[in-house]
Length: 338
Image 1 (cartoon, helix red, strand yellow):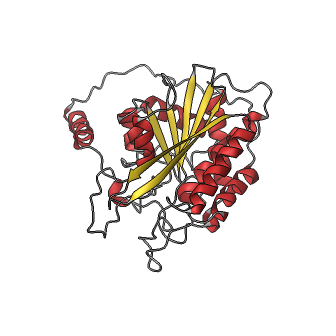
Image 2 (cartoon, helix red, strand yellow):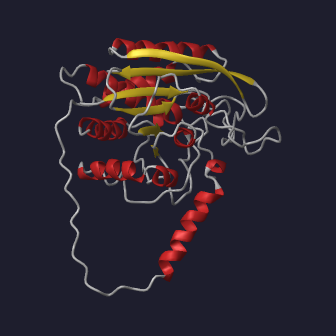
Image 3 (cartoon, helix red, strand yellow):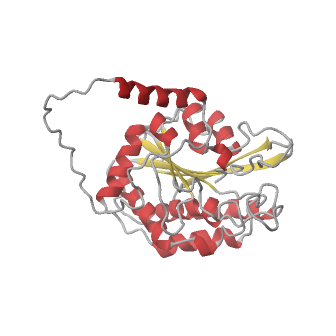
């Protein structure tokens, strides 16, 4: 993902709301009256088709094998064609949305959003998404700063999970009771480097999702909610409850995290409030009006997305098939429990 440290900025109104809430709570008088215990409804884990972690890993490897999926390159074209063909082979209705978008430095970029629809005839739907492009420069590295990165975690991991999910569900003769749409957003990671004196960083990230949100290619599209995956393949990944997700779609966050914890994945999905991060879900919420959340690796103690983030170390060595399976299994539960 293009989740740079300077992307932890959200509109001031959101931060003011959070601060006001904290101050307001502190001023309330302590109510010492005994309150009846409120029991939370238990989460029932249901049987779902088996998510294959090795297959998901292979999907990540395949993307990396194309080389850096940077806009305006042959690798971009080849990977886009492969992703659409894969989803079509799973019986999904596929399409691509192509346009020219302008980067922070005024460079025209070829954008290709790749889409697949499971049971498009159903009105009851959810949106699943990830970005698939890679950072055109390793601006957090100490070597080869101007060369693109592999983006195994930051880009390929979310796509790998969603492709495996689609593959498994396509083989289920019954399937879930809800339709879903998969969108792989392009030109997410072309945001302005901190060191650059050219252009502006304002909305320079997530160009593909911004375009998609303003030009939704599905008629009268009103999914129940959206789930974005970003950097979901590293060993010992931690997914805090990202603050913008909690602001726009708290019920969706709490449902997903409750399911994950009931499945025994508290280490991956802890009850930790994360920072607000500018990612594709922001524009799904603000431009498309789709309540959407972000499942994203973020290390609160280091205030970082991992030491390999936006460096050449973001390669297949950081990908852990076990993490891919955890995220995939949780999503399977969410979908099949609808």
